[in-house]
Amino acid sequence: MLFFLLIVPSVFVKGDRDKFLLYAVLIFSLMFCVFSFFDSSTKENIRYSAIDLSPTMMAKITIIPCIFVLTFLRKGFFSKAILFAMFALASWATIRTGSRGPILCLIVAYVYFLYLKNGLKGFGKFAIYAPFMLLTFFVALYFMPEEIADRFLPDNLSIESNSDSGDRVFLWEIALNGIRYSWSGYGLGNFSAITFLAAPHNVLLEMAYEVGVAIALLYAVIIFSPFIGLSKAVARNSQYTDFFVLLYLTNLILALISGEVTLTSALLYISTGYLWGLGRGVSPRPARRELPARYHHAGI
Image (cartoon, rainbow, N blue to C red; front, side, top):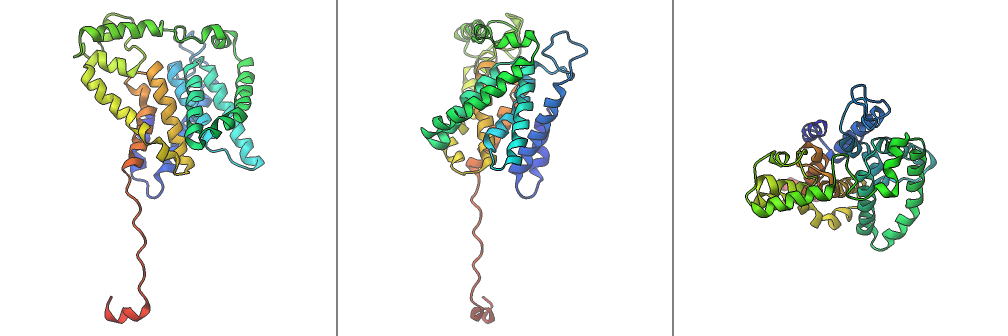
């Protein structure tokens, strides 16, 4: 809900709304990174922080500074030191949730982002940045409690075991079987009637199961439409645009393997709306050309 509230003041900001929205989102995410240092007083699960937000949603927020760093790499020792500290803090906070999906999705999204930005040369850049990212990851993982560290072992990284709430593949199969029997849907919230979960961890399957295939296709058009114009977006050579492109890609992948249609996909909707605005934006009006002084007496 906090992220949706960011949209309202950004509408009234004069000048560069990109900067306002980006830094507002970044500041909120850094606040959540700090919250992750404090354990929950009401839940026994060590993955919960003091604000008792679900670990998956918490990870989606705390990983935002990593996205910022990857798109705002700057020259200079002081700038790099600040960015490194920010990346380390966000990495620690995200790993602290025990959620693996956001980390894996960011890696996949970043590889594709570099490909959009630099073509095949992007894979070379990823090869340069990857050791730094992995080193930060393993150092943070070393200081984690054993219960959280075990979740990142290779045996626990499969899709089937990527949830505390059940086998993801099994949930997808349940949703697909239900869709085959009824293309018109079963009503909002009725997925929980046959499982102990409210959604199948896939936004498209959730929409198709609850409100029908037709509306699910419309929803798919909405969230996938910015994907077509990503090449033009990165061609703007704007770090602010790059941030929202990488944020969009990360959360789009997350929505397909770990998402719900509700506010847990708020970051997907915000980045989608931003990229929509780029696609529909009007080019700035050219400055008016001044006429020579000899024409002024004629009232021109």
